Image (cartoon, rainbow, N blue to C red; front, side, top):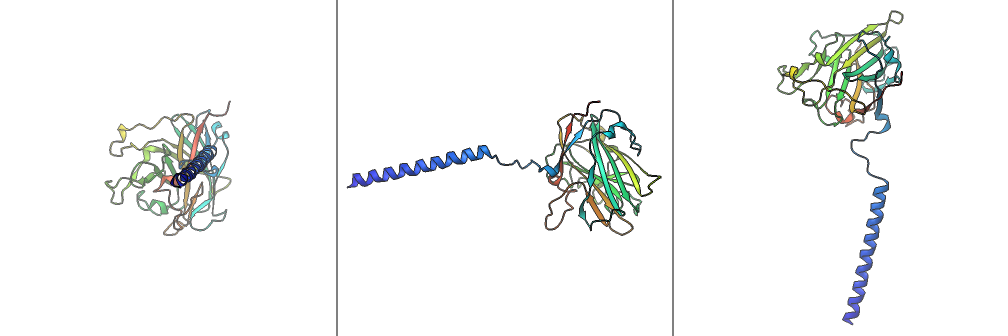
Length: 280
């Protein structure tokens, strides 16, 4: 009787093991067929390809370079702070191209009021009208408020460039100028007084940047196939103490209702990929 019960138990155990093995094989096959999405992989609306410029770009606020015929216009239309502005109040679009020495932006804006209430470029620069360019050189994401894991370049109407620096910065609020990272110029249209053309060249630095010894740090040379984190935004203020609108290039998933996350978390950046330029 004991031997019979033992045999039945062994048969049951074997069946259980066989079933578990079959389930494991099925799961392994499923995992192979539908791999998990990498945490660094971005959805289509958060990716953008950038062509290499086949001709020089002169930063003068005039979009007459042949290079700007490459690529497609992208809209600046995602509201991160404030209500959606009317088109007459603010609207924007942009193009990106690259060369070995940096990333180039052409931005066209409609802004009916240009407002710069703070003469000091390090005082509440985000509450003045300014263009903001977010760059994460290696696309690694993560916190960057007080380090150089990524940059949030605020380009004022005087073309000075501010960002948050390390906590040991000399400024009491840890704000620093990074004018040598960005070349920028904008001009108003004669025919359309509220239309602004803004050309920008951004040198690309990685997280080894040392603001105390900038002469020792060289910008990265860009190459075909490189991926970087990127966002573009505009702070719009028509005369208030605080900016009235903050309009970005890509959607940001809110955290507790807050979409103003780009200045501190590079994980919300979109991904750009540098491609070979069009054949001339």
